[in-house]
Image: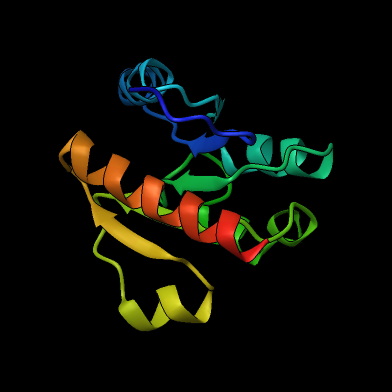
Length: 129
């Protein structure tokens, strides 16, 4: 049964094959998905008014890294949506907490695990506000 989501997922991923899989997976489950292939494109979308319910963020991106997006003003401008860092890079839990990430999912990951996290975070965000 598709989930009704009023705001899209922002997927920040430069691997076109993976972003295509994730976009199709979430769209098939009723989610709107906005894909950005770089931190710069994601930040521009946020500054232009995109208000995602959750952000799935790779760290290793062309140009600026995912860490740069976490440090930028774009996420705050967008209402500080929860961010799931999904990357093949080892991540320091202290750095995640310091930058305000809601969670970390090492690649490769099961799609159902990511969906469960997204559902939990979007439900928490909806109940907060």
